[in-house]
Amino acid sequence: MPLASERQPYETRHTAINRRNYSISGHTSIMAETALELFQRAEQLNTDGNLEAARELLAQSSDLGHVPATYRLAISEAAGLGGARDRASAQRRFAAIEDAYPPARMAHCVSLAAGWSEAENWTAAIDLEIRHAKNGDPAALIDLAMLRLLRNDAESEGDAQALFASALSKGASFAAPALMRLHALRDERFVVPDQMLKALERAHYLPIGEIEIQAKSKSGPPSRPGALPNWSDLGSRLSASPETWIEQPGQMLAQDVAAQSWSQSVHPCVCDFVAAYAAPMLAPAEIQDAVTGAPILHPVRKALHARIASYRQTLTIHAIERIMTACAGLPWRHGERLTVLFYKVGDRYAPHADYFAEGTEEDTYHMEQSGQRVATTLLSLHAAKQGGATHFPHLDTSWNGTSGDLMTFRNLREDGAPNPVSLHEGQVVKEGWKTLASLWIRERDYWG
Image (cartoon, rainbow, N blue to C red; front, side, top):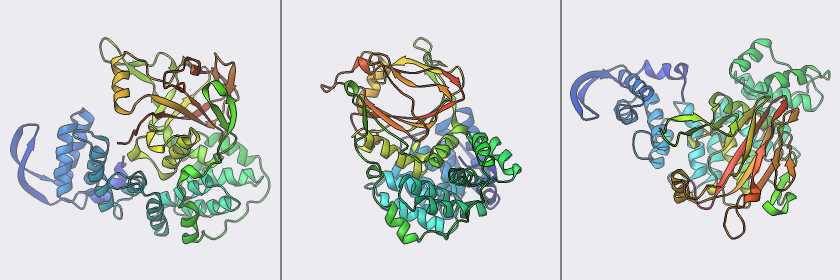
């Protein structure tokens, strides 16, 4: 969501008073309000949980030309908040304001890649992001650098370094940890000012302390970044769908659940970014009380988690979802949204199965929407120093992936029935901390 500092330039422009009839939740009255005032009332209604009334006010403010209201209305439509879900309308609104309002740019790129209004078009999404990067958008520069590292080849780190350096020169703090990590991997010392490091800590950039220690342990001079990559060449390198970016198959871990693993398939800078991007969204895992319906702490998942909605994703996170579904041998549209889990010392995920239980009202609802959870794919973003392995008790098999490792397994038998031996646990973290990205993959299209 846009911060107040992002909204200010647009809010102060749209101050003309417009007198009209407003109908909010059945009450009609004549009011003289500015677009900004309508937007502010909508924000309060959202805070109060009156999403339908908020959406109506956002629409009125947007009609009066208020750009942040258009952005928030598009999010409401994309998420189905306060009314029907309408991703096609959301995409049109993001496209209409992206040149004037930076937060809308990445959402528009993802909507193109995922096919919110027309057929999915990954190449068009890359072309659009390159256009924004050429115009100096630091978020686009960082995301293209991350994608370049995901699309790994001999020149990927050089291209990424140049893109990160350009973003950092424009004040994008998230480029700093990536550059520090890149240089440290080459035994080069590159440390940014303490003021920026403290700002990253305040922004909950999870691995920044570890990155700083690693960076300061190096003594070699930092190599200078080269020129920005040729934009046409960059587009060509990234134009292939991400499902093709990883070699298949992986190493077999357990035949009974078709468990496979891939070692260091995702670059450490990308792992750092995903963990840091999700950090502000982390919250305790909850479920609904069966009697009262009130939210209660999850009985088996003792960790923080963040589910990254499609309208909050970057193209990098969208690409990771595609890669993770490809590892499981399933269509990317069957994947749920990426969930990031954070475990501190003492946290664990008790033995559980990922498939839906038959006979419960909630699980029956989920299965009616997109079918069973066929497979699970995990990406290790940061491994604990001790403990934290994913363990299959019935198979006496464990996976303790280091940063960038992937693992996938099947939750169902070949006949489609739940497979009890897929029971697994996240063992107790004994030292350090663990961050994991998890993706559940369904029988049918989850995006439809």
